[in-house]
Image (cartoon, rainbow, N blue to C red; front, side, top):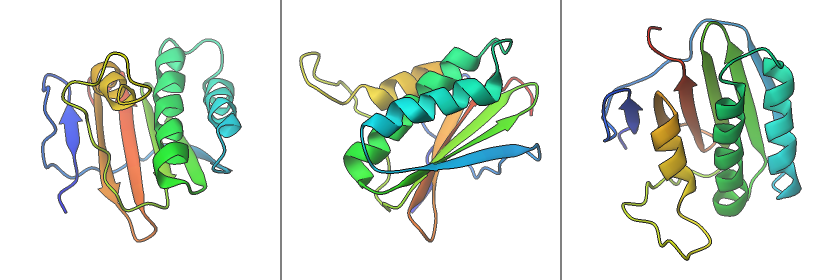
Length: 145
């Protein structure tokens, strides 16, 4: 299976490998419950602090990816945030199923918009299969890494 990666300036994912940046990473595990999505969002806001310009975008991206982990993977999930000039985030879950970007989500439907938002707001994003499931990652402010 080829990882999905989308980089700034590209509307479509491309099969390019990725590696987390070599910066300090803060992680926390969450249970597979809908109330944990808000807890994951608050975790990101706390880690990034009130002064970081792109903290709200990073929190929204984690929120969407955490909601997908709860809804689709139905496993515990781990949020990882690397802090430097830019923000690198991951949501790891126990499902091997790759994320699926909806071409045209139903405007009246209850789902299908999360990855559309991730695709539009992240400078880069993708997923990587792991032995335990998958990691969905994003970068914000990723003009040069």
